[in-house]
Length: 285
Image (tube, rainbow, N blue to C red; front, side):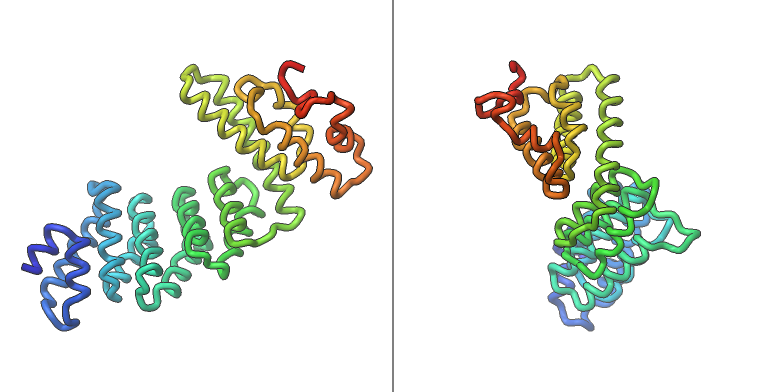
């Protein structure tokens, strides 16, 4: 019966094997491990199957199961989606209180985010590794997120996730890191502008405008008044109700470091631009 359950449903089989005495049904245990490893190693398996097998191994939680997840995670020949599934499985071992799960996950994440010179780790895997640090609250690995923000030529996807990871871990970046992140936001904003110029699909344009607004809010936090003003009346953004708050936030950020900044002071002087709650911020003004 146990063999049938393992073959029919890896997740259910993993729970049954976990509950069984350690020295029971060794052949079934071995068959279970080999089957999940084969799924994770096969390019034909696909995302749902990779995730199912990775979670089954994590739920089983034996050292032999952890070994398979580690091997798939670090093997350059593994499909990136299989690597991410294995990494997700290792993250779940923390939630299921698998022995040594924290140490194993720390080791895997460190090796993915600081690989040897002859090893290349794709951006999608790097993003997942950084997200794993964020999800598990492993502050001991915050340096890996920090270093990604210091590296030149890092993709926006990696930069954005590294920033989110530091924020989730309550790590406050220094002035240089904030400036670099603001520059990355501005570059991504320009890239989206180019994409908008070549799309005719309404749904895609709406998605891109939402991303533009997200970036502008980040730039407001960093005090980039000039970029905000340049985008204030752009198509797809002009009617956003958040402009007053965004500009105020940017102006206050600038004033905090430069109290005599004329532009910041003027933007915060609502009487100068109209008596209404929005003043010149309203599109019709």
